[in-house]
Amino acid sequence: MAGSLVGLSFARDAFTQALSAEAFVRAMLDFERALAGAEAEAGVIPEGAARVIAVACTDLNPAPEALAREGKRSGSLAVPLVKALTEHVARADARAAAFVHYGSTSQDVLDTALVLCLEPCLADADRVLAASVSRLAGHARRHAGAVMLGRTLMQPATPITAGLKIARWAAALHRCRLRLGAARQRALCVQLGGAVGTLDALGGQRSAVRRGVAERLGLGDARAWHEHRDELLRLMAELAIITVTVGKIARDVALLSQAEIGEMLESPPAKGVGGSSAMPHKRNPVGCLQALTAAARAPGLVATLLSAAVGEHERALGGWQAELVTIPELVDAAGSALDALERIAGGLVVNAERMKANIESLQGLVFSERLARLLARDTDRAEALALVEDWSTAAVAEGRHLRDVALAARPSLAGQLDGVFSLEAIVRDLAPVLDEALAEIEGEA
Image (cartoon, rainbow, N blue to C red; front, side, top):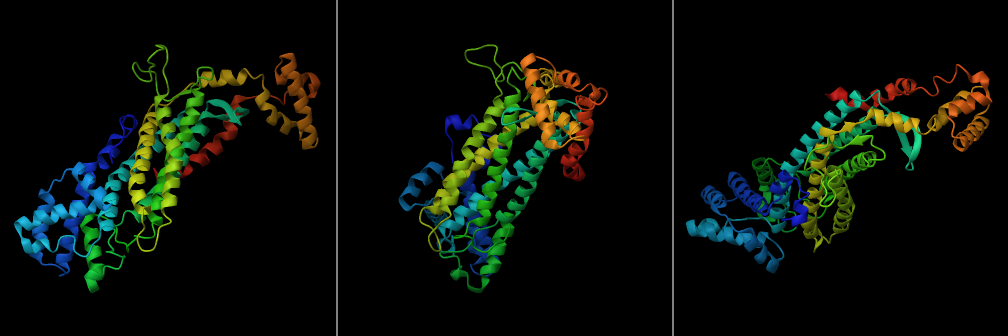
């Protein structure tokens, strides 16, 4: 589970701890303790054996590196773990050792351990998303009156407000949080199926034992999902969508923070943050960098998981094993994105004056659509668009404001252009759109 040194420099600490080798080993032992307890309660194994196994699971502390070395020989970390646990139990009670891992299989241990390690990551993700949505909604309301360029295909388009742009970020993250919550509830379930998913060794107590294991571990109860991994895949897809959604926000902020644009910063400048090793003046958008790095990783990892899902029969050869390697990487990328999101949502800086200056530098051209709509009241739309296109060409060629060109060509428009070229009119017209974007978020607050 350990990441590279470079990877750790982008990782979220809470996720790193939850996915650590030590945490995974402890989760495997938690499964074995819960299994023994549930089986004893159902009368499948002696209660005394379950007590000895529970003590052994608490006391045993195998080195993850040693388990990994031994796991290469069998293709499963569970094999050396169960061996070590059985030997430990046998030293206390030879008869109890026969009931270690009873009726279970290696995939039960590994899948359930993975789910247990995911749970704190998902709880943390929910907290970050909730807080970030709230903070961004607050930014949106505060900057509802800051008019900025809308941009399409990387070119200036019709003006919008900074509030609306930020509100759309918040709304997208809110949807992500809702979907993650639903996927989390369905996927955080115990895996217990035995060799081929039928729990033959448990007979008529199979459901009771599975339910008992789930309750002891705080997980949902579900039939064995050895061969069909759809709920886990859905959960991973939602984490990937969160990661790229944060990446999209970071891309916007990074572009707006370029010095020649200067409309937003991910956070106020701070000494030592975003510095360069060679250029003392630089303040790089490192939160955006981190989010975009995570977003670049996510699609390939999801593709690997989807490929691995095409497994063979009741338990796959190489497929779910590939999942066990890949899922922590994808979760790590999501954690990195959430780490960056906290910085952006908490510290976002909006420069309304620079936004206004950038609009004014374009000589009114970005109001061309609004001007065409005004003209279309008295003529057809195609003719209005063609006329405004000619006026826009003249404005660029002559270095004049589009409003002045329009007035010179049509003096009768005097008195009608205030609403067309007014920033206040933009704010007023877009206020309902902003309200709509934030309605669901604020309705749940």
